Image (cartoon, rainbow over all chains, first blue to last red):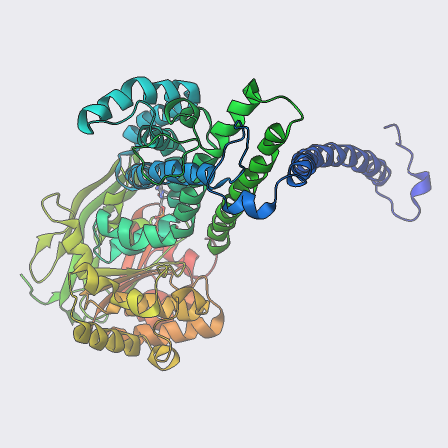
Length: 316
Length: 268
Ligand SMILES: Nc1ncnc2c1ncn2[C@@H]1O[C@H](COP(=O)(O)OP(=O)(O)O)[C@@H](O)[C@H]1O
Ligand SMILES: [Mg+2]
């Protein structure tokens, strides 16, 4: 930038004017490059998502050339390995629903209570000590949880429930719930912390206790965020694979009884992907069809979750 | 105890009943002393205004009266704030801050209605006290909303969310909320600084009405406002109470140079 002469800048006399003008081009150029990089990054993320859905749709379409959509969605038998194979996905769906529901019954209340405690009751120093432990719990690989369920929780449950099979949805669901607790707790806690201090002060100034303030002011103020935490937690449970594949067994079993073994959508996908069925067969193609169902379910929950999360930001 | 007391050593002497009084009051945010040796009398059913440049400790002093500082760790009171007629030191650790906050309400700078209905907002203080009888709640809510000049505007939509009210209405709702539980003192911390002139005028009118029944302590950085609505004014500077007197005296014949500089707009 050697534009020290001000000759060309017309009637304006500032010696800096030319420099400001040249800088402007440099500035704009730089910003455009940065913008472009950011755009490409964002575009990649979207493109990958679209590509996944497109591949699923394409592969699933060859499956649906052989199996009717009605049988797929309403059939209660899932036997791709049998000679007369049946492709009714309800057993897988029910397996997913039952394990996810158990997981939610654990993760919802526990995550909520932990979030409420950390945000409203714990002394700040204690909260700082506790939170890394939660994050640690969230960082444990799911395969460890899976074997924890199979080798520790199931034997424990068998003492309480005589005749409980070695593979069962109860144990898998409970452990999956434990795994999701930190996730639910941290989203819910974020939502509660986002409640402005001014609201809490308003409540305390009326003579409210900590508990009254938490239940009557912080909770309604963070309601949509807490709901978002629940919904995103459920979505995590629906998509979770390892724990259910290891601890719930892998036979598709059309039952709502949590004591029974059953396969979930995800467990079935790993099982097939690991190689029981020849590539290109209808059975193999079926994983794309159930995968599509899985994507639709989790997408649905995630969209609701994100919508609820956005609502908190709009209020404050 | 509750004896009449002279509140002004300036020209016109007036006898007032004291509602509260700080004595050699100091306040610390950790190691940072925000109030130094403050002696402030608060006359019953009068409006006492706290003025002074930003950061001089007005809010800190106000929030000491309802023990707001107890909510945050590391804060410390020293000295006394005596509350009459019972003559207790309300900042003493033996005194329950919740009881104090039930007797001394507060209205904040920015309206902070709860994410609840209009009715629930006003009934909040009563519900906190365990009042569940619907008839009592309804009666008190109406009374408080009338007291805050808001009843006519909201009587048909008590079950609407309070967020849907305008800024001025929200602040009057917060005043109704403070009134509903019959407090002895209401603390106002710059209650009109987030409002337009019309809403400000209506809040000022309201304060003039409320003081018939309740003692009022108000922080304002608007000197015209202090002059318009208060009976007594305290000028604070750097954590100290520089001058206290009847409002009509203090603004016309300030005794201290600093007060004069401030009210004539030479600093602050
Ligand atoms: N939470 C806090 N922690 C530490 N210092 C504070 C805090 N709040 C206020 N202060 C300090 O105390 C002094 C008085 O503040 P404040 O009472 O808010 O003044 P005012 O209301 O008169 O503007 C200021 O110097 C301010 O920086
Ligand atoms: Mg202030």
